[in-house]
Length: 78
Image (cartoon, rainbow, N blue to C red; front, side):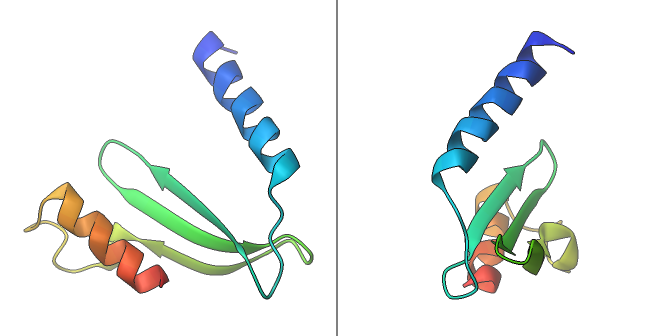
């Protein structure tokens, strides 16, 4: 693997050792690629994704800026 990927995996493991999501208080996982933004709420007790939202689901994503699209995704998660 590349050095960059190794660092990302190591960072992820360190964070996941401290954070744990339940049904009452799920874990929020946000991934931002160059073109899109994704957010999901995860219940670690049952290893299930409770909610998944991306900017691909928005119909107006092409006409707005990345900041406005990220705000919309956040509103949908909330």
